[in-house]
Length: 178
Image 1 (cartoon, rainbow, N blue to C red):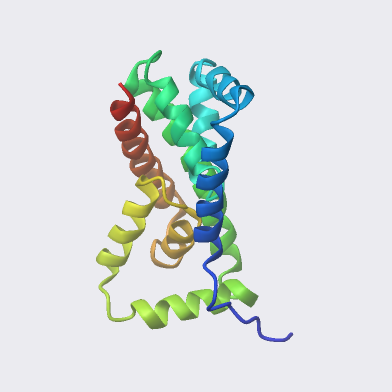
Image 2 (tube, rainbow, N blue to C red):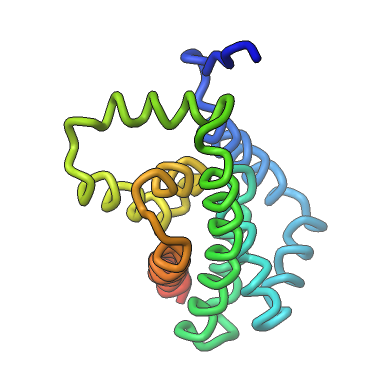
């Protein structure tokens, strides 16, 4: 099997995040998009869960941030953050499981080796802390979940840490929206 070359020119999750920001900004100019976000934002805890899932992906994290802002006016911020954190945690866990299962093969194995080469001088606790900060923020979670799959050995540990970090991030956004 030929080696997979990782592009040095583009950081795909970052590009998707920027494109998502631009499209969210453009979409917010249309009343139908604002109405859709309001509908999701007024769907209660189901809307919080959906916003949480969208919060984890590079392309839709800015859209989810807008929905979480909308949720802040109608819901208990603690419950909304807990449920949004669950949605994002489930998405992150799926990414974590994919990386964990495939970390010795193809592009993911090459990425793991590259990350270990570049972060070899960093202590593991610092690598984990950086990954958790990115997971808690509206930045794309894909790279952090992948990075943490190389440093956190147990799936349940990642699931708990991801849920807590995402809940804190969602709570911060919801609190800012109040």
